[in-house]
Length: 411
Image 1 (tube, rainbow, N blue to C red):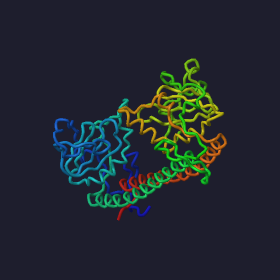
Image 2: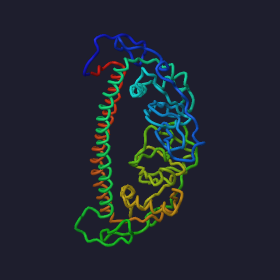
Image 3: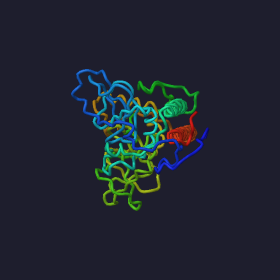
Image 4: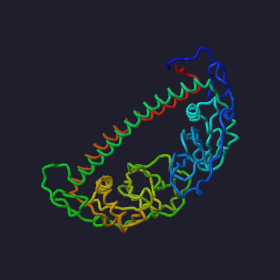
């Protein structure tokens, strides 16, 4: 910590604790006027002024609600993401917009609001809500206006520096993810031997492939017809019953989330049980095309909106197919399907005729083994970057807290 104040006192506020002796404790409404946002749909005749919700500006309208600095806070839904705005704007009806009094710096109020313990004030409903009364009655501590300005200026600079570091790590992650996909694509379309002669695959988005590889359709290597999942509601978590794998369980990297574990009684699950090596394909919505390779020791079944494919392992290895579905050529195939349809939906009929290129079994295994190791190395680098981002975010949060509660003196 850079500096501390000379004298402190107990603020009487549990989440703030001690504050500098000269800081004032009062309710939030004593320093700011809180107003309700409104519906903007009567002003859709022109797109001039930003309409702001909890996620920021999402559209424009022909009128504005306020012109100047303001603090926006969620009233329903997302209530823990304060926003600082400046200029002419319209706040939607699920937002509050608060105008600071002359003795409150708006940017300081924004940083302070980021630290509010919103969970203590949210109403106990399925949709988180915050009343104007509860928001206004939150007890907070304030220094004098010139000190507020100094804190706000300091945090603007420091937070900007931290955000730049976070952006840099994000960019590195994006490059690593792109590199990983290129490594996968190169391996599943060209193989590991760079000296083999190539031939035209006959498929535009695949291009050339090794001369001895086969280009065909997926269904020729299936041991049974592709199967849709069970249309059963998920049960509570019961580890004695088969896991019920749903679209929401599948992460972008093809692994399963641990925190969404649900089960299905065996009587309902028995027609949809998975064998090791089964592949699951998501068939609609935002997750369409995501894949999962079942290689677990626990019993599991699968839900509707997922399609099971069981390969003939004497001709096509499931782990090779899984990596194929992580490649650029698979993404290009998906896009070609969507161009032909207004709805993002890929059923078993389309998956079964998916173009696929097939090397020998030994090559498939070598490629899969290579990609397991190579992707693991890249994933480890990505994980390190993600950990750095989390540490930067934690540091930013602690820095803001220390400054707006007087734990750190800003000169």
